[in-house]
Length: 159
Image (cartoon, rainbow, N blue to C red):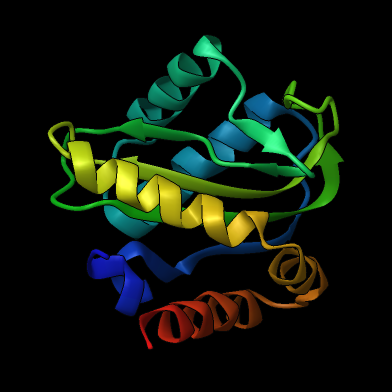
């Protein structure tokens, strides 16, 4: 199933979770994600913003139900990493169902991470299609609570 199934810490650092983020546009969202990737993972914020923007031009990563999974391949990584943002107010990202998003899980992968990238994308997609889990994410009042939700999910999935 992959390393991230049992070790959420290798996919999502506790400091890579933001709660009630006051972001008002998809451009501001990508800037936030770039800055968080720079702070948490030592990546270039500009590179992350550029890669996410390029990917979004191919089609929205908002897959419905108020959820988006922007993703891209970035030099300087040795494994897939994630960033999670719970937005204070939903933002229009031109999602497939035309609903604005308030939950964003960003995945960043090494350039050569073919199957690892796809497995991580599939796992995050499964988490964010689970309505009960999504409701818990929306109700979480702190970054620690959200991180704990993801950690408990990986533990449960591994059992």
